[in-house]
Length: 154
Image 1 (spheres, rainbow, N blue to C red):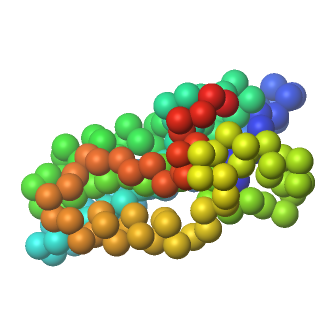
Image 2: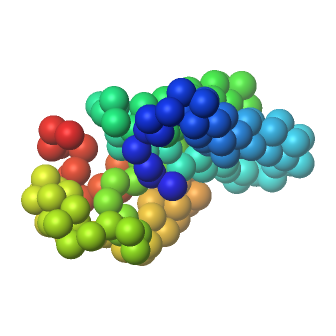
């Protein structure tokens, strides 16, 4: 979950380790384990989900964004390593779905900085997946799916 940095040092470390396991270690292990099987598929593709904030990290979300940036770096490394047999790309979501804990004030604040001024929903992510899966000449690419949110300052 996209959540602010914990305040207690021990909680910060635990939070960072949790984000690391989910955003970096698990995808790394999955890529390593699946690469041999994928290499035999002529249109093999791996898609990592990163985040638009890897390009403009906010200190308030340091652990989350740092591990998402690490996931992006891993994806680009795998794109180079696994080519030409397997294509590896990323999708960088922005405000796709608000969570129940996001109150109306937070939602309006985010949408005010999103040029398309609306929550994206899941369909745009699916459309990006279809684009990446269907285009056999894309590897090492990143697609922002954020309603233009990356254009705004944080």
